[in-house]
Image (cartoon, rainbow, N blue to C red):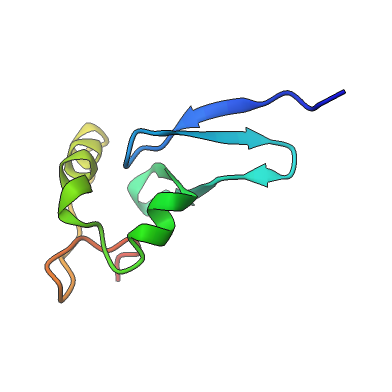
Length: 81
């Protein structure tokens, strides 16, 4: 019998990712109170790019979290300093 699957939505790109025993397709960014899929984590390692910036800002506003300082590229970092 296969373990039940659970799908959630990435707070950054809004795509679905899967959660089930021993399958973790998500990273928790506790400082932003958000869960992001592994694809977003890998694609935005050097900062949240312009395509996802609006989703990121909307999420921060919803959670009353001030935006972090932009990095040298002018993007928001995944891990604030």
